[in-house]
Amino acid sequence: MISQSRREIRDDRCKQFRTLTQKVDHFGFTNMDTYEQRYTLNTDSWEAGRPIFFYAGNEGDIDLFCDNTGFMWDIAPLFNAMVVFGEHRYYGESLPYGNQSYSKPEYTRYLTSGQALADYAYLLDYIRSTIKGAEQSPTIVFGGSYGGMLAAYFRMKYPHVVAGAHAASAPTLQMTTPCGSFFRVVTQDFLIESPQCVDIIRSSWGAINRIAATSGGLQRLTNLFKLCRPLESGDELKNWLLDMYGNIAMVDYPYPTSFLADLPAFPARVYCANVTASSFDKTNDDIDIVQRIVRGTNVFFNYTGQTDCFDTGSQGTPSIGDLGWSYQACTEFVMPMCSDGVNDMFEKQDWNFQAFSDSCFAQWSVRPRSEWPYIEYGGKNVTNLRYYSNIAFTNGNLDPWSPGGVRVQVAPTLPAILITGGAHHLDLRSANKADPPSVLQARQEIVALIEKWIS
Image (tube, rainbow, N blue to C red; front, side, top):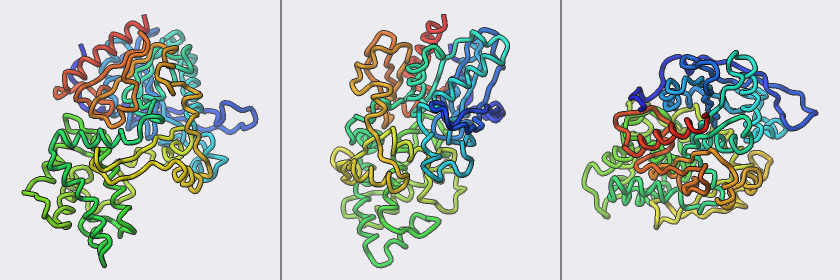
């Protein structure tokens, strides 16, 4: 059984960084540049010959994921496993060209999932060749969200390196998932808590538009939301709020966390409680509606009361690499997003691939190749994945990314585990007394699979 433990790993295990010199370009023979990849390695539970648990780092500082992936730490003693977290190139401090890494296309071109997976393969080869007793240690790869995609891809591309993969909340099919699916799940998460809350949120977009259109309206909105700098447009505020709703739904965990921000248990519930704290009807004026939204935003951006003003360019923790992900979304991972204002609580926004491509070219001098992930890894038709093996896909019904996950089992060795009441990769977090039974069951299934994969 998996014992109860703390929600996050807050000791120094996630701060004991090591580095490995990696090639910037693994697939060419002319660029001889190298960089230092950061990783953590812990052998507290490990015994010679026993497994290596490896986390495929995603778009952020590796210690953030180490702090919030307690499941690996919880089960390491069961398997006498080594625990390794590898930082993704171009994130955290693993910057191939230092502060210039994002400065020009000649440098950013090496930010790809394929290059990152090669980093991980080299890292594991280094560990096996330099730590006595690890030469034959089987490796299980873990990852959540984009990291979950990488975990699955790692097993697909390097089956001789990793014996199995736990791909949690991995939207590997998101590139061809209907564009409105994400915001429909976000809306459902809030609707579960309060239909009135959803009505107020839906009304708020028009209220913001009308206030912004008045003389001095943008300054009034700036003051109401206590923003650090004056708004340049109403869209700036709305995009900030749009991202916030998605993030609240993603981390709608049943206990307090500090992954994306310091949040209470069930943050969508607390948000809605703040928004609906007093009576509301359709005649309420725009200022009243917006003030309700302001009370809600404090749940995500200022739950501890320590923040004096808010930055519309930020969504909580600076440890998530938004800049790097914007490049990856403009190259390999085009994930269409849209809303219709009917089946969701947002303004109508169509998906326009050409406009998206133009914005990518303006920012990065690149054009997206939306077909590439399916060419490289498969999954354009989910049944194509049946030729792979030993990948467990887990998805929670509260997670807005779940529609893009693998939710059907297409082969006996590709289990698809659904977690009722689970938000974004809840199953990768440490065991907690507030966990729903479904996530306890999912973790037990993963433990059984690992035992099978390494036997």
